[in-house]
Structures are given as C-alpha cells and as structure tokens.
Image (cartoon, rainbow, N blue to C red; front, side, top):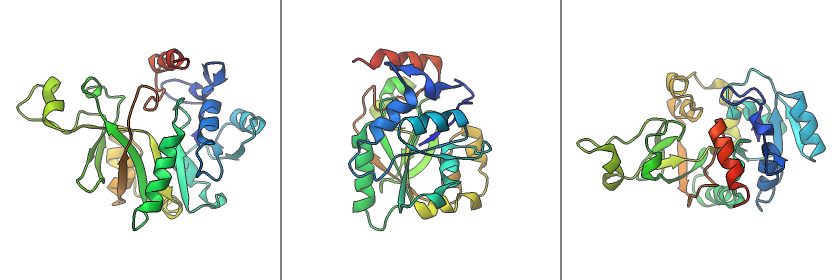
Length: 243
C-alpha cells in the first residue's frame, strides 16, 4: 500500500479521520482480511507514516519522495518483497472490499498465461459519466483495457450524453492494480508517457509501453468505488462510514 502526506488536492488525506480512525489504517486493516494475502505492507516517503504504520503493527518500507505514482513507489522497493504477485491497494480508498482483492487473486490463479497486470472495473452509472474525477476505461472483447481516461469514453455519436448509457456500455475503473513482480521490477525501464502526463493516470504508462492490463468486473456500490480525492469525497466517506 503506497501512501504519502503531500497529496496535491487534499494534503494529509490518508490520515484524515473517518469514523474515529485514520483513513490509512482503515484501508490497511481491511486489506489484511483478504484470505489470499500473505502480508500487507506500507510504502511511504513520510517518517510520520513510518512511525504510525509500525505502531499499528505493519511492516513499513521508506521510499524516495521523488516517486511520481503509487505504483512507482512500490516498484522502487519490489526487490524487498518476496512475492510473485504484488497488489497495489491505494490508501485513499476507505471502504476497500477484501472480496475485490480476493477476486483479483483468483484472476491471477485462473488465467493462463499469468497476466502482467490486472485491475477491477464496474458498470458506470450514467450520472458519473461526465465527472472527471471518475476514471473511465475502454475494454476489449477479451477483457483487456484499451484506454483509461477522465473524459467520457466511448463517445456515442449522434446522441445526447444523457442517453449514451442506452447505446454503449461504459466502464468505471477502481484504482487497484495487481502486478506480476517482474513487471514492477522493470518499471524504471518504461519510457515516460505523454498520455500519463496529460490524464494524470499512472496506468497509461503501462499501455503506452505495450504492457497488457487485464480487467475483471466487480459489482459496484457507493462504498467500494469511493476514492477520497477532494474535501467533498472526504465528507461523503464520513457520511457513509456508519451506513
């Protein structure tokens, strides 16, 4: 689990109180209940988070503050992880569902050859289509991600956007990634991506470098797809915590 304090839009969000607990601890404790996970580890550039994570009983790895994304942060210490598969669960998802993590583990077990990268998707409701904070993904017939965007994709020509959901299937993306360890080990060799820089979506670096991202569908609800990126997201999380 990568975590930093200097989030651009909402600084120190991972330590924001939700239901009497720091958000980061809620995510760590939930992830630990997934049956197939051998260990939950915290990767951070913050000495404060190192101290807290250790106090909470987790192994913590200190990383460079220059890491540009959560995946890059994990990749920088992948040599210290004794695992063939590493799952990146982000610390700003306060209601992460351990069953979603378990489903990802099953994808790695069941698909042949073993996928390079796996990520969960969900059927996007019409009211979220225009929201740039909700990441959309275009998916092939083989369940592979073709593109991720903050824009409303795919575009439905000749129809009002309010009617698009009746003409095409739109997918939302849950910001969780499963990697074969060798893919993370090669992260530093990936060329910079203009698409990643434009959309501010780390997964586009993988697609831009020809790495396949496979998907699997989850049943979405208001909790398991919530990422806290803004004050309004944080307020929504605090409203949902007791529901």
